[in-house]
Image (cartoon, rainbow, N blue to C red):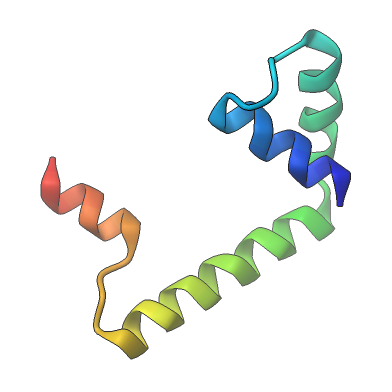
Length: 65
């Protein structure tokens, strides 16, 4: 799980982007398990938004800009 924290931390600025961290994360984010995890999270988010009548963040961003 630590690698997800690293990716998230660098994305939101909580962890400084260092070449070692970026290289480590680049190798991990393309792994099949990571892709399946991201797909699952996207499916669950979409399902939740549909069940509550809320728009997905991606759709909202497209309509706002």
